[in-house]
Length: 421
Image (cartoon, rainbow, N blue to C red; front, side):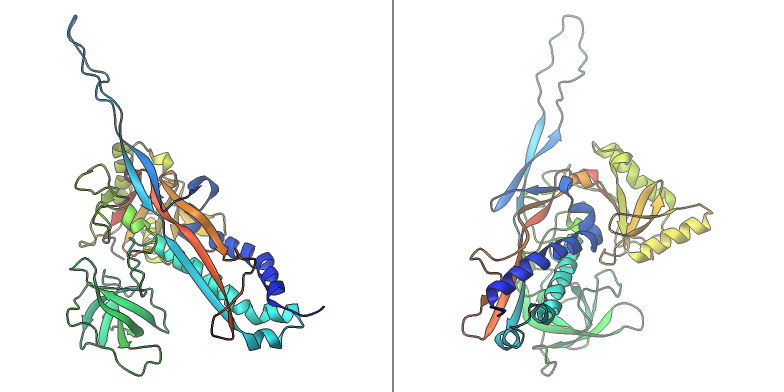
């Protein structure tokens, strides 16, 4: 009686912490909250998810003939299929035996002792998932921009912006070779960003063997500008994101194309794109409207199906500046979850701090779904959320999610690239 054991702790965690975590995932991350809804999430089972794609019409429709002429050859609707791989994401926390012993007589004390770890796992999970949903499946944290030595480098977002996903305290990474199928050039390199380069190109960074920041680590001599840094061991295992879906090209890691469909063999399997990353131009209303028009012309979706526009804060600011300069009124609106947006022709233009820069997405949510075989949950199939770590006086809890972001009509979305910020 009165002892706070692991079974009791597990019950406390399940009852009090899992629902708030789910709520935070839905309401505190912009892109995830707009996609991960009941009508855009599909629970499935298996190692991959196969979705039929309607990609062609019956050509024997409305065919004119002379009186008594031979009727046209029968046609049919044309279909293909998208195969969406399952992705397995995990979060892990540990608490030591002495911490449990020190608080065993007070459930409240135990909760307070581990609260920071639980909330930290929740916060970091939501940020990681939202970041991946903005990526192209590679989930690059930063790109090599230049290097003065093998361990002193400059990193950026591959668009000459000081925009990276490496925390200020640094993190372990793998460096991949962008010119050779993204093979690993250097594994387990601790990247520590220091200052923004004076010209604003990126961050200077130092490379170490580990988080002690004592021993410099030599990056591969084959390194080159544009090589990405990713979390160790994650290549090919991260979720697909809108940078890979709302695009006119195949995602970088997928030789077989997005969901098994290459652009070369399926020219209809592209999003509507205007502009180019390599050529920056000022944001204008005609450019924005051209994306709406391309979606309406080249897909089965209309302007009314585009439910929101998505960008980073710099592009949002450029849009507000454009409205001011053109003396065009715009409204502000508060969306579900408390997100602030400005409107374009009645549609919310939403900023997301993890969105890639220099671009503006035009999103039809009906075309995007999270296919999952398991929602976010703690591993407790043996009846306990916290489990003993073999060989150590420690106990751990593991958070998991099985699923991936998929697209059922790639041409229904659009993107405006190369926006000068």
